[in-house]
Length: 86
Image (cartoon, rainbow, N blue to C red):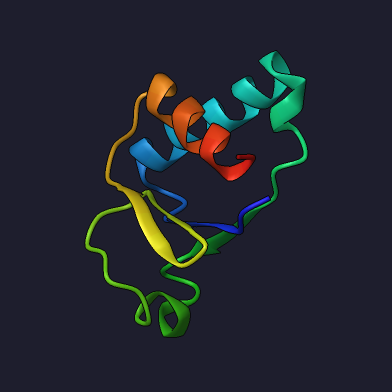
């Protein structure tokens, strides 16, 4: 399984949607449940966030490679999670 990092902000409406999609997809598809996502709230951990090249949140990295940046739709989130288990 690939390592997944999520950079987000607590007050970001797009981040809240992304988090909701993750929960919904893990409920709908049991094979996605084992995926662990390291969640980094960028305003609380700017030292970590500054080490990565992105501008918008939510941003997902998988094994150190940026996979998605900015708002995300549920079908995009599903595709991203499925890549983590390939």
